Image (cartoon, rainbow, N blue to C red; front, top):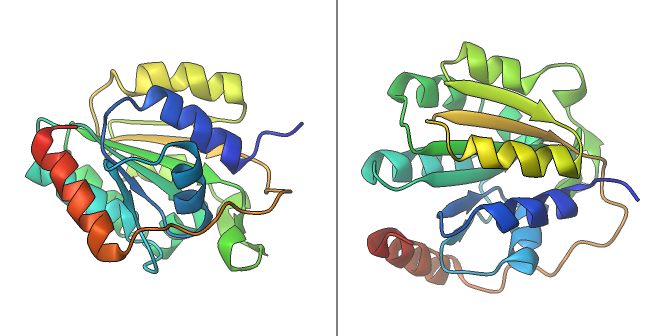
Length: 190
């Protein structure tokens, strides 16, 4: 049995606690909804590459509240300008997790450039306080414990194999409902 993004997302949500999470568009949103549907999740729908920007904005607006972004390698490649912005602003409450399967899986499985570059090195060079890579479920579980205890901006790349199963159902809530629930979670501190 291989370590894929569905397993990675489920493992992350076992450790995430009540921290609000902004989720990359596509399969990551759908996997998060299947693993842990909750108001503290902002499901990015239709704006590839923007989860990290929304998460950074939330982290800057709520500096005492940890904010987690669960991104994909293709989404990060789509918005590389976000990495130096997060490094420059340096929010200690910003935790950026990238699930790297080397593909644009949600759009048909086209190969991304992630196999040829190390996104964690780009994050570190961009000013993230920490940037690590893991490739197994046990390494991810262990790394997350340390990750959430360290100051941000922190970056964790999770190397996984492409999915071999069908994706979970699409996100059920409308964009307006997602925004309302996420805003409420931010206001309540959950």
